[in-house]
Length: 153
Image (cartoon, rainbow, N blue to C red):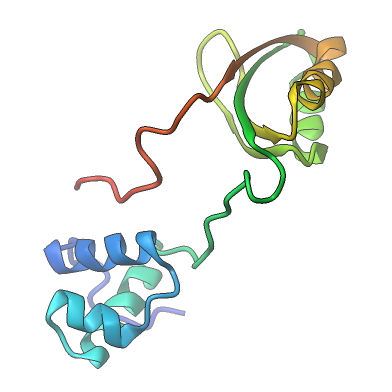
């Protein structure tokens, strides 16, 4: 449903400030957002509706601390499927609970997946799921320099 007549309007600094605040805390109240960006609550609500209508805001979510969930090791798994195994690898990625994000990419590997595990034994078991269907390489995350943020437009 198209709720806004301003769909083609480009995002302005106020919209970006709203997006940054929501990215930092999706549970921020409209009243707190309004105070932070210097608008009334109804104006912020309308801007949020416009951002939703334009598909810029697709939903509201939470950020998990995987360490607190008992999964302190994060790693990126790069997979190069054997000929004819792309679909099977995609299915295995979807069915592997340790995979928290996966993208099909260009380059030597077809997939890059972020996994979280409790220990190296669990990481090895995840890698082993893919070996019958292609080559896999892994990089363990030491630290995160940039968290999820709003891109500059």
